[in-house]
Length: 300
Image (tube, rainbow, N blue to C red; front, side, top):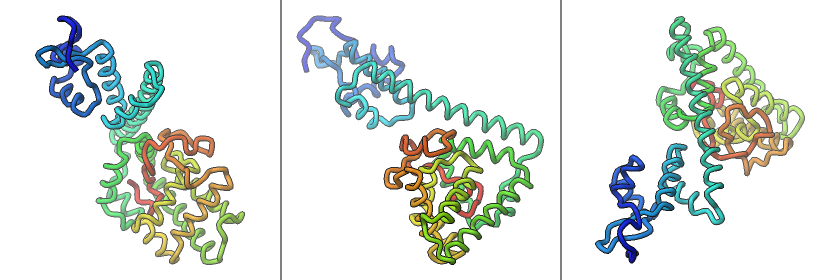
């Protein structure tokens, strides 16, 4: 595009960069990838940005603050029929979600700081001793890298920070009892979808809820890992070969009975969702953070 108007028909890249607090190089890159393309060029070939271009830059900046990648932002801005009001509404929604996640993380940090000040924190060695787990430090690191910034992770950290050593011991014992019941039912031939199987599915979800709020859809996605991740499969199949696949089936059939389609299950990013009403709302975190009781109940 070439400019056929006189001076003052648009801002230069330097002026826009200064106004928005960006580098000229950033605006050049956004132009190259088609994210923000200047409307005009001067006769000398320099970029000139209109007021509408500047507004688009502002939209990109807001979306970046919500955690979207540049590719995702480009897709959002290119949605057919979208307008300024729709973009503002979407930006506000994403910012509110980010604020909620940050507030949850602050609360978790405050709780941990308070317990450390009182000398009540349970060390990693003490946790490992209680859970007698073969889930090593590498899994904990992997889990934190993948889900450490989520609201559910922050909620789990807050709850764990409030647990005393007797609380950890009781949690371990209750989960051991649950897994023993699951193995017994499997060996006895309890069919997924039966009354006993559905009761066990609810017991399983209640055990997961110890760490953060787990909806039926979240439970489905967690159970899916029991067969897709060999570490979880190995853990359950040690009790009875085939237990991991059976437990996944029990959860999925039980979910259908509650009106949740396992194939359409999505992870709801909110940590306060506790039932079917919130299932499948958004896929913000893929399969979501696995709570300690998703496998060997090793705290993560």
